[in-house]
Image (cartoon, rainbow, N blue to C red; front, top):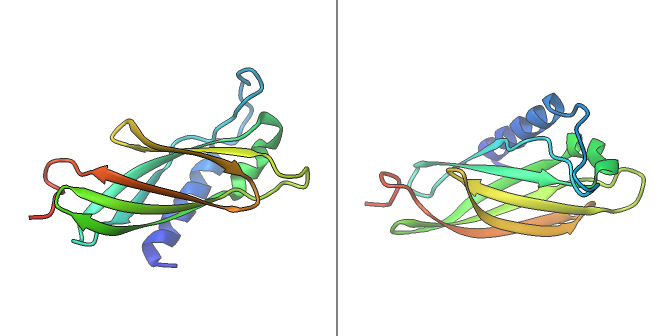
Length: 136
C-alpha cells in the first residue's frame, strides 16, 4: 500500500472515530461518520481530493470505526481520470450488513455502490477534472 493510501486510510479512520457519537436514525436505514477526504495523486502528479460517505444500518455503526478506504488514480486521459477505490467495513460479530458507499468530488456525488460488510468493496469511477488539474 502506498504512503498516500495509508495516509488516506488513517485519516478516514480518525475522522470516523471523532464522529462516532450517538446520532438520530432516519427510518432505521443508515448512520454515517462523515465525509472524510481521500487524497490521491493523479498520474501527472496533481492532487485529487474525493470524499467517501459510508452508510450502514444504525445497529452496526460501531463497525465504521474500523473502516478503511484505499485508492489509486489508474489512468489520466486529458481532462478525465479513472479512479479505483477499495472500501472495507468489517463485520461486527452480528453478521454481515449492507454498506452504501457514496463518492463525491467538489460536493457532487460521482459514484454510489452498495455491497456487504466483511468484503473488499470496489468502487470504480471516472471523474472530470476541475480546470487546472487537466493534463496539459
